[in-house]
Image (cartoon, rainbow, N blue to C red):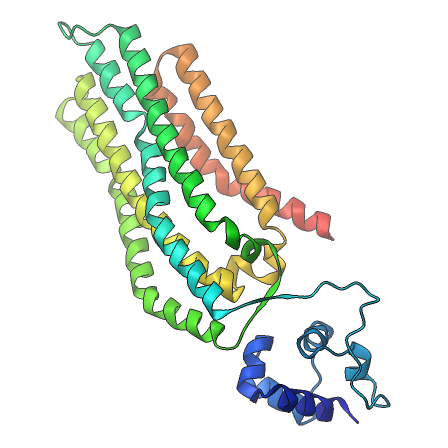
Length: 329
């Protein structure tokens, strides 16, 4: 019995149509039709997926002389591929949508955390303000740390809610019938919101320099006015990032379930490495910023650390990605 006949028999035995089998295999119905019509043969990866899907050996699928359907051999110790049900997929999408807003808020809080320090520092330099430079620096640092701590609490709480679904980020999995279709439908409904959010985020980030330039035009010798202009710039950037983060988290949840984009089967293997690089990089940036501010006392100028870090990050990520790819080879 040839492969095409075996595939037809296994599919019908499982009660699936060609469309259903195509969805399980992440291929088109036409591809399945060609397999069953003996017009083409799937590649090795698809053969392995078929053997796991139907519970038979790869030898049974590939060797014409084997007629019976043996159980999947366990001698190779190949782990079973995890299957995601409709309920699991719906729960994951609901959790990601619910946590997108607090995570975006936490990012905004981190961006805005130095603003109070800037304002208090400017006020301390004004005659008759009654605020000493040391008091302004100490109070500003305390407020900044409290805001950052609250943001971290939001991150940890959101992470605890998504923790049960971490396997979607790290493991290769299959989805049950109907899951992929549901996810694609919801992604298409969200596409318009995703596009508008990216437009709004990009617009706010570009326009964020307007308050700063406006302050320079009005009176560049007024320290308080310049600090307020800088604070407005931070607020615009933060609002833009909120649009990016919230929409990005929801869009990413669709890609994770479909194993597409940055969460494809191959790229998923790199996700842990990328996350580690990002964590180390931004922790170092924060440490440099705090060190510069504390040693020089010029917190406003120290903010250039974040600008430089943001500009350099894509290059650092690209270099690390290239090194990882070379290591794989």
